[in-house]
Length: 300
Ligand SMILES: Nc1ncnc2c1ncn2[C@@H]1O[C@H](COP(=O)(O)OP(=O)(O)OP(=O)(O)O)[C@@H](O)[C@H]1O
View 1 (cartoon, helix red, strand yellow):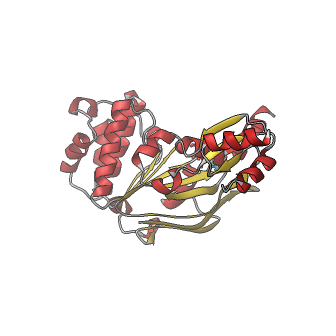
View 2 (view 1 turned 60 degrees about the horizontal axis):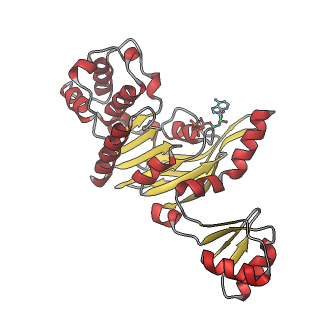
């Protein structure tokens, strides 16, 4: 179990993580989603005691990570697979991880096998590893003590499609055995397929959270129209719910019903599609403001 309450990190006047609260539960994979720079890594670093929060708490298994006896035994962490020591071999890297977690050397072979690294690959220096191999090695290090909790920052980065499928299976199995998995990603389709619970973050703030089913529920029809206020009124008169937004309106009417009402009222429709067509639509909608501001900042 990971319990995050009002967690905040400020760097000077910049707020990287802004008052986030959520729980990652045992037996479930929780996806921590957000665009680049949203604050995912900063939040994860606070969970494992590498960054001090400005406010709020992050508890892992009910305790501050740093106060856990032999934390690496209970919590498997992979934050930055590229940060592994380039001069050590994969096997040496894992032997060190095993020692730190108080595990026997024999656990190294089992961990290598679990992540699909061959003995030959394990004998090579990490500096010569591909990113995908580093991710596998990082995952092996996180899994070495068979911990109850896994905290993984962008674990799918650099993995090929077969590797991603393999990781998905491994983490699902791990959660099915009662483990808690928190993984961050900006790969929306990947998260959609692996996580049962989702926490979406944009500009340091949580913009949506819930089970995958809750968040991906079909929310109706999205209508683009320069006459959206009148169209929303007409739809309501026809017995449908209709909510105008900044650039569109969302309604419980089907596309055909919207078209009929618009035709009868002589109102222009410029766009018509079902909402809830996937996490990506929702993600883009929820983070639209952030994306626009990021573009403006980048162009400045
Ligand atoms: N030590 C620091 N000092 C100042 N700003 C920082 C520091 N660490 C992170 N930030 C800023 O905090 C914001 C969040 O960064 P973070 O790395 O947590 O995002 P992220 O969601 O993990 O992004 P990505 O998907 O690109 O890895 C960014 O704007 C980043 O520049």
